[in-house]
Structure formats: C-alpha cells, structure tokens
Image 1: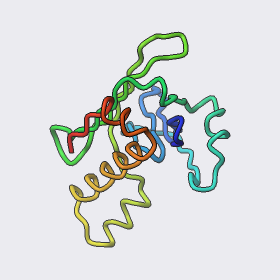
Image 2 (image 1 turned 180 degrees about the vertical axis):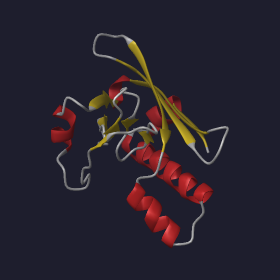
Image 3 (image 1 turned 180 degrees about the horizontal axis):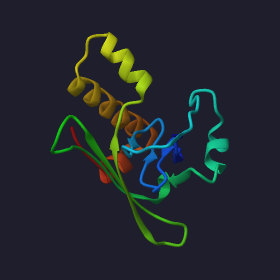
Image 4 (image 1 turned 90 degrees about the vertical axis):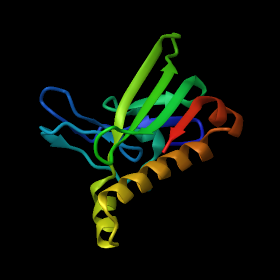
Length: 146
C-alpha cells in the first residue's frame, strides 16, 4: 500500500482459480491452494508489484467504500472494498483478513490466542488505511466494525 494506491498481490491460487491472496493487507485463501508466491514486501518496489499481471491495483482516488468487520464464525475479519475502474464501472472486492504465517507464528510464540492474533492484524490493516488516506476521505469511505 502507498498513499496513492492499494496493491493486491496474488500469493496463492488453486487450480480452480478460487484462492487469491491480498499479500500484506490480507487474504482470501482456498483450502486447495496448489501454488504459492512470496514477496519481501518491505524490500520490493511497489511499482514492480503494481506491474505484475497477476496482481491488481486500486487507486485510492477511485475508492467508494472500505468495510472491515468481524465475521460471524471464528476470529476471521471480512474486508470489503468498493471502487470505480478507470472506465467508471463499479467493482467490489470481498475477502477475509488472514495473518501471514510468519506473523501468526511470532504472535503464537508471544502467547497470543487466535482471536487476539486476528484482531491485532485487522487493527493493523485499519491503521494502515487511516494513515494512507486523507482524514476526510477515511471518515467518508470507511466503516470500521472491529
């Protein structure tokens, strides 16, 4: 994520095309994931991620709504984004925030439980967007239901 755009990097996929990951932001992961790509998000140039055809970019100027809310079952949080394409067509992206495995392992070693790990990760996503978006835009667009 930059101050101008969100870059969604495909990290895992299934043969059926069901799985898609949101990289540093979160993930929708299929149980039958068959391939995996990893990135060092702190070191990689965002422009390189943005130009990869397996990834997609949402300009923050095109955002219409962000929603982060607790799912009904388990500790999972849902992340929904509504935006307009360059052609003016409305699009929606829906996913679940799943902490990266390295973060999961670290937090487990620190003694945190599943609920706390998921909540902490969702809170970090919220904080990232609140810092990246102008205050007025964040207040208008975002629905944070943590």
